[in-house]
Image 1 (cartoon, rainbow, N blue to C red):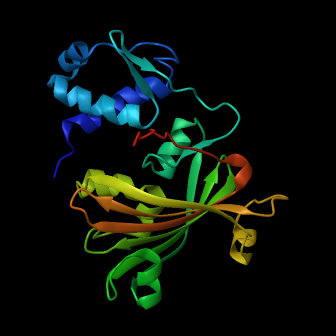
Image 2 (cartoon, one colour):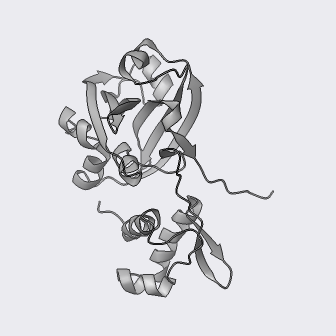
Length: 242
């Protein structure tokens, strides 16, 4: 199904913030101004702003409006844990050059081991993909992805080398909604040492996670192994009073 209106508004306002159009401490236009600009209701604008608030870009100020609290990371390339963002989107946001090399691409069937590790049902047909991610020519991430074939039909190595999320959203009209992730520090494997530019670093940051679409279907499992010095993970937390 087509993307909801609030998603395109969210993406545009986020772009305005990360590009520097609105800087730290600035107040955004009013909901009425945005509603007129995007030809939508105030509720639609409010939903987009709510997502940006939850991701740490904005802070509502009672009686004053919505203030930008996002500050661009200056010293590291910023990979977000709280949001769902492709490698190409992250690199583009950080004004870097991205390259992806597909190391493996095949169809597999989930056995007991894969099912326990990923959450896919035993017998599920999956695309198994390994990719090496380069940022400005430096190999910084080694990805292992599994995609549920019934939810991502037609994947090819060529698509995997460009952007799988762009294919899922623009070609298959999938709405990607939720991710659960776990971050650990681990010793590099022989594959890490062979593929990645790890320099003298004795460990890699490993992000493992499941991703769900708007139908509540687990369609992706990913394990990303990161060179640590070029990565800074951030997440915005909201205190819940009991």
